[in-house]
Length: 400
Image 1 (spheres, rainbow, N blue to C red):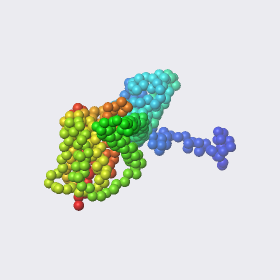
Image 2 (image 1 turned 30 degrees about the vertical axis):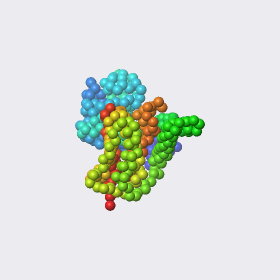
Image 3 (image 1 turned 135 degrees about the horizontal axis):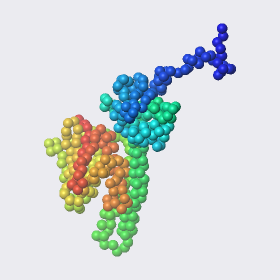
Image 4 (image 1 turned 180 degrees about the horizontal axis):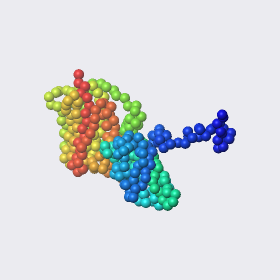
C-alpha cells in the first residue's frame, strides 16, 4: 500500500515516516552543534545563582574544561570565570546582575566572551551564546539554552594582529618623525657649508679665520655625508639587500683607527678616551666584514662621546668562548628606562623634537644591531640615567 503523502508537502514525495525521522532529538542536536566545534548546554536556574543544574551536559565539556560532564555544575562554572566581556549592549559584566535581567525578560539574547581558568589551570577564552527558556504561566525565564565556543586561538591570533598593527603604526610614526626632522638635519650642515664657504672667499679674512672656516666646512661635510650614508644604509637593511664582504680584518688596527678618529672630539670635551685590547697578541686577524664592524664601533663611540660630558669613554675587545666580545662604556647621561625598550628601533630618538640638543638621525643603533646580527652575533646594553651606559656585542671568533 502506498504511504500517505504529508499534507505539508503535496507536491513532494515526503512521507510522515520521513518527517518523523527528522523530528530532531536532543542527542542529534548536540551532535550537530559539536560537529560545528561548539559545546551545547541546557541550564535550569536554581533558587540562587550557582544553584542551577546543567541538564545532560554534552561530551564536549571534557575537552573544553578538562572535566567530566558529571562534574560540570553552575557553581564550578562561575568559579572558573575571571573576566566577562559582553558582545551585546546592556549585558552586565556581573553574572548576578545578568541573571536578574534574564529572568525579568530584559535580556532576550545573551552573548559574551569569557576568560576562564579550568580546574587544571589552563586559561581559555570562551564565547557563550544563549537564549532564555520561559515559563508559559509566569512569563519568566527558567533557564538557558546555549552553546559554548572555544575562541582561545581566535583571541591569540587577534592579539598577534594587534601587536603587528601596533608595531607597524609605531614604525610609521617614527618614520614620519624622522622625515619631518630630516630637512633640519640636512639643512644645518648644509647651511654651514654654504655660509662659511662664502666667508672663506671674502677678501681680507685673516688666516686664523680661514683655518677655522675650513674646519667647520670639513666637519659639516662629514656630518652631511654620514646622514646620507645612514639613510641609504637603513633603506638597504629594510629592503634586506645588505650583503657581507668577508675578508681578513686586523682588529687591533681597527680599534686604533676608531681611537684616532674620536680622540680629538674627546680631548675637546676634556673626557678620557681609553682603548683596551688583549695584550698577549700582537695581532688579532679574523675573517669578517671589516667595514660593517668598523661602522658598528663608530656608531657606538659616536653616541658615547656625544652624550658624555665628564669622565671617560672606554672601549675594546676580548676573546671569550669562541666569540670575540666588544664593549663601549661611558659615564654619560645614560638612557631613560622609558626609552630603553625602543632604543634599537629604526628612526627612534629619545629626543624627537627638532629643537633637540644633539644632532643625529636616530639610525646609528638600529644599523649597528642589523650589522651585528648579519655577522652572526648579538648586541645588548645596560644603562643607568645620569651614570652612563655600556654597550656590548659579540661576533664569531674566525681566526685561522
